[in-house]
Each structure stands twice: as structure tokens, then as C-alpha cells.
Image (cartoon, rainbow, N blue to C red; front, side, top):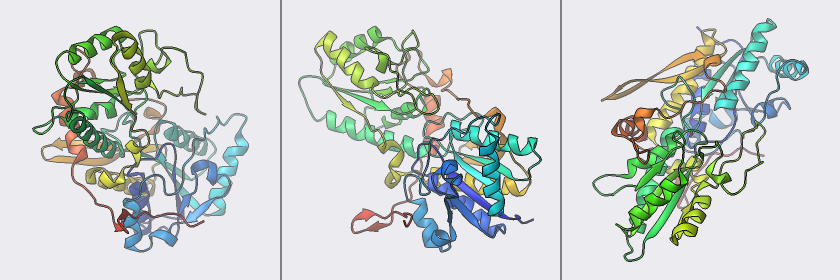
Length: 411
């Protein structure tokens, strides 16, 4: 069986260290299965509306291009945070999208992204079904937050987890070099409402590292008084204290910790509150109440851009997810997202499948209770067993003049 017509792939939302590997997977499978053209939409669906398309043959026809793309961070095609409106009253936008698809003889759209991007896939596939349009729409998962439901994990998460665990080991090693007065470090980790990535800080502990002293996830209500007491307890025992805190930890009244002194009114185009700043707030509280000064470290974009230390497992699975998306479309599926299904841990084995997008879009998967310690300040061995296979092996950069080389679009 071969694909008919051309295909287009887009990237949306926050990039990851391996999102480009999914583009490579789409391209490789598309060409192998007979697509005449594999287009990339520049800046996601927003760029597609402007017919901003790229013929990926220009960059990936040679194997060297694919290998370089797999080692390139961020979104090679560019990304966007564009909320596709509901069809009612906005039919012109949908008809414009389908007109562009028809103009370029595109039969399949593959969209790589997280929760909000899967909503775009859902609405486009639903519109096609309701209006008798033959085009197919498939979602490819991507998020360092690891919060998409159904799939065991998301491409991008494993590499971000590897970076966090590595960075925490290095931070702990640096902080332990000092004696005397307590050196407190608070590390703020991305993840919004889910604590998957913050939990990866637990991987730092091992024979050569004492590990972080506490881990706070948004799945548990954050108690400021208990947190300050924990700091005082640790400071009385040791000179180096390193704590990992999710950016999305919340107080009992539902406010983010970052809103402790003043509630935030900043929201993105999807209505999500801006949550960064939890550790800066906590450092202020700790100093006011105890006199202990804290150094705040926010890895910020480094968490999702560190391709130089990406997990090869993650790269391979991101590539496989892109490839599986093309195959699902070839089989006639639409309105689905590719999932990663863990078959076994020892040896680790994962397979791809396709799942109804309606059970995924706009939903979040939280860290389960059994992955969090009873006191809410650490993760369990079960969580560590879930995490470890996802950070295994490396794909080293191709260096040029002493720095990693990247594949970039020509202007």
C-alpha cells in the first residue's frame, strides 16, 4: 500500500530536544511510502494559513540532513501558539485550511505538539468528518511536561529528564564543595500542572551523589509552613541543601505559589496562567522567616533545548512516533494521536499505536499517587523505575569548530 497525494508536517507549542526527530520520522516514512512531496509548515498552523510551506527535500533528501536534524534542538520548522477557534462562526478559517491542502494536493496533515496542539488535530479532523472532506489528520505527541493522557510517556520528556537529573548532580556537587554556613539552592523545574519533570530530579541520587533533599510536585497541595520547617530541619543537619520545586506547585486555596504575594493576571493565548517564579517567591519567604538566604536556579529553556545531552531512547521514539503517524494515515486513520505503549521494563521495550484524539485533547495526565512519597517531599522507587529507561544512551552532536552543528532553515 502507498500513500496518495502529498503530506505536510507542522510543529506547535514549546519545542523539545527531540521534536525535530519526529519531523525526520515523518519525512523518512512519507518518502518510503510513496508521498511525492513532504512539506513542512513554517510556524505551525498559523503559517499554514499563510501558505508558508517548505519542501523538505531541500534539506532532508540526503541522509546527512536527517542525521543533523535529529541532533538539532528547538523547532526546525518554527512553531506557534495559535488557538484554532471553534468552527461555528469561523468556517472561513477552516475552509481556508482545506483550500491550501487542496492547492498543494495534501491528503494528510501531521501535527506535532502537546495538549493544545492535539485540540487542533481534533477540531480539524472533526470538521473534515462533518463536511465530507477526505483529508486525514494525525497528532504526534511532544511535551517535556509528559502530561498527555493514554500514552505511557511523551517524546521530549526523556531528554528533559536526563538534562534535569544531570544538572542536579552537577549542582549538588558544586554546593557540597563548601562547609560552614548552610548553602540553600532552590531549583525551579518546568511542567505546569504536572510534576513529571520535577520528579526526574530524583534520578540524581546514586552511588556518587547524595541526591536532592526534597522534591515538591504540584500533585500535592503545597504547605508553606511545612516547607519552611523542612528547610530549618535540613539546615540544622547539613551545610548543603538542594531542593527541586515544580513551577506549578499550588497552595490550598488554588493559587500558584508564585502568586503568594500577588495573584497573577498574565495568561497566554490559551488562557493558561504564567506560572514561573515559585522558587523566587519561596526564597523570599524563607529568608523573611528564617534568615537563610537561598540561591534560585531556573533552568528555564535549557530544559527543553539541551540536544547535546539528549536521550537516544527519546530520539529513537520521537522518530518512531513520526513514522507511525504517516503509517496510520496510510491505513486511513484520522482524528488519532500516536501513543507510546510500554511493553516491558527489563529489557525496556516500547511500541507505537494510534488512539482516538478525543480521549487526549485538552486533558492532562498527572503523576499518580504511588509515585510520590507519603510525606510528599520525595518520589518513590516505582517512579524511578518508570523514569530510568527513558534517559538511556546518547546520540552525540556533530561538532564544527568546537560546537554542536545544527540544521537551520535558509531565509
